[in-house]
Image (cartoon, rainbow, N blue to C red):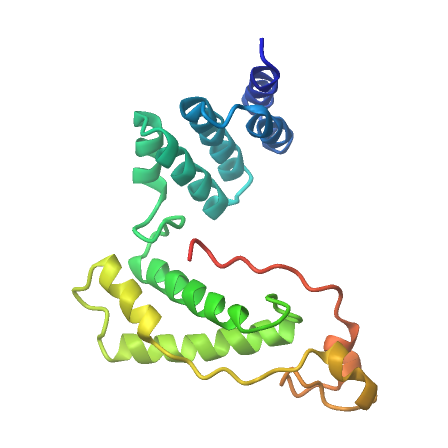
Length: 212
């Protein structure tokens, strides 16, 4: 039995025993060892990895895993799961269509914002809050104007891409720390003293931006 199959079967056993976190480690090992030309086998592993991610509550990760599996091999099981759990934006489906629209809009604008930052990550919770407020203000304007009514997902994405938000230029607090005291206002725009804001922030964390 090839090594990838051994890991795959171990992952299945863990998943059957309701241990999705443990199963993911075996599925990851199986993917790394499975021959790249074995598309159907890779799809099978990714399908099961998606099931484990969904059990862990990582719904967007599960949908992404199934989408990759679907590109490799269009099996009925993958098609069924995508039909039930994915929306038209390639993200996890929610009960209300406007929530799906909002998450797609936010993902597109977040990607745009991070693309012009040298760090490509949000540096603090205050920066994240500021960004969400700006994006939501633009979102409310779109909804209030009725711009989304009757549009397909592709048309909405084009509209989201065309919506320009003017983001303030933010300096990372670490870069400006030489000229700021602990009592100075944090340059992230939160209005708080630096020592109680980004001055105590940990290392930057990557941000999820959906499938966009």
